[in-house]
Image (cartoon, rainbow, N blue to C red; front, side):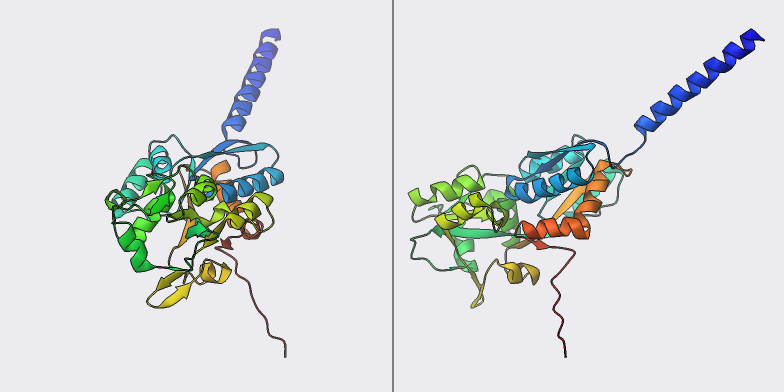
Length: 290
């Protein structure tokens, strides 16, 4: 009788421990750790969304790591990353590789409209830039355009828009979007190419300081001038508007999927708007009263 009682206790304890282990390993969107890899060009909006998620779910710990766009994608395909932020379109071959490596359907989670902008020093006489100037300039040995590096989102996106390969373009490099702004005054004849999110936050002191240092050039296409303001992004008429999206390597509903769902909800989209970018899933509505 005593032996039976002991066996019953041992069995109960064993089942409790196993149950706890299963509970610890089960998917959870509201606790645990996650690292998101993002190009520096959209680091700010990614960090703002991560902060918003952690405020709502205090037991989650999200780290935002900066990495060139193409390198982040490679880490995702290798299983080294759970979430990356992308801006360029993937090729059919890349989509096929993604689906084979992750065993997931290619479903980009679009969350914001950002832009690549062209800037010159504040005292520059230049007032606008045409698509032709950009295209011709990036094939010139003068290397008048300054990018933040190879494999970067800005270079990839401009190349994609001009239907060229990044390796075929000629340009100068200053590492980092903010560095380009800060050092552009040393090169009065050059044109900086940066991500809008670098200084899009309306009331941020650093952003205000950076905006005061440069002039953002409107882009002229077929005789019409376009600016990277809210209207230009919302309508996507500004030629270098880009849609930011998340890609994941997570099959269950864990933090990665929870974070993406949050980013695309009304609350997440309001955070995007406060970053000075156009939310992808909500638009300003105007109602006429009669």
